Amino acid sequence: MRFEPGALAARDGIPLCVPQIGGNEWKYLKECLDTNWVSSGGPFVERFEGVVADYIGAQYSVATVNGTAALHIAILVAGVQPDDEVLVSTLSFIAPANAVRYVGAWPVFVDADPGYWQMDAEKVVDFLEKECRWTNSELRNKRTGRRVRAIIPVHILGHPCDMDPILKIARKFNLVVIEDATESLGASYKNRKVGSLGDIACFSFNGNKVITTGGGGMIVTDNAEWAHQARYLTTQAKDDPLEYVHKEIGYNYRLTNIQAALGCAQMEKLDEYIAAKRRIARAYAEAFAAIPGITCMPVAPWASSIFWLYTVLLEQKVYGMNSRVLMRQFKASGIQARPLWQPLHLSPAHPGRHAHNCPVAERLANEAISLPSSVGLRVEDQGRVIEIVKASAA
Ligand SMILES: Cc1ncc(COP(=O)(O)O)c(C=O)c1O
Image (cartoon, rainbow, N blue to C red; front, side, top):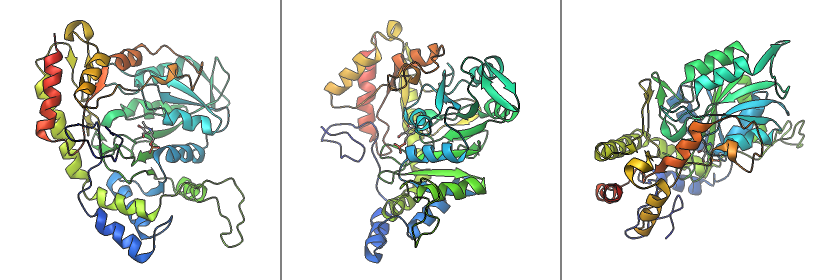
């Protein structure tokens, strides 16, 4: 049974989170093929950039091949230098930490907060105030002596981080805030869209995201110079496109017109898709409310969540089963569920990196299970998922 993003669900199978293609995708793709604009460049790229920037409320946007490339370039243009340190949520997919390493800098992992599972803003403040020293207009980690340059709050699972304390401390110590909003397009914090809160932000349009371009990403910012540099670096840093003169090392990171055409069609459906995610979340929350040992996905009072991937916590002693055993029950019924990520401070890919105490992220990673959340999830299929969760309770 194939469950990759983009795969059709096998008969009777329920995938975790697959794309919904039901708007102008064919029409716009045909336009690309009919006009021969199939590669990097073309009217849909500009249009997609404009639509996303307007939606977020950002002045500039640069489309990229994927969200990881967007993060890599955002970190570069924000001025992070080799050997700098960057604070990153430990409870996250690994891409932002890897992107920090791509530029030769080091991630410092920050625990999740127990209430909303996002980067713990209090621990960010605590680390910067107590474990760093401000000298010569620079913040340095007392233990490593390295300069701390940026913070990457990752808005996980469709819910924003608590940004105000993060932004306040960042301003105090002249740190750049790079939002990883890849999982949360459409979510907002105090009525402001994620992606418009920090200095620069990144989105992903991978197949499992709320909208998809097959693979794709976007950098958004209000900083004209950074946007210009991001466009330059993502298009091979061509200083003279005719003579192929390059003064810097560039990257082939631009989105193609075909992908952007998909993106334009998908953006037309975004509000509808977010409404579907919220309906799915409501149905899960109502069904699980009375089951002891299940914590439903929380929403902070200052947040509007898009519930990208509906996730619950199972307290084994009370619920009677742990998340991995429940996952196997789902698998036996052809239903795809998954755990969250291994917290990054434990990742073998980032050995020994500033392994601060991150007990909350470790507990959440043990207890969490993400449930089928595709925009097109049928009511009867969600009912099957709910029945298994109910039947497995002690
Ligand atoms: C938190 C986070 N950051 C970055 C990425 C990377 O995006 P992409 O897969 O488009 O490279 C993802 C997921 O795909 C993600 O979940």
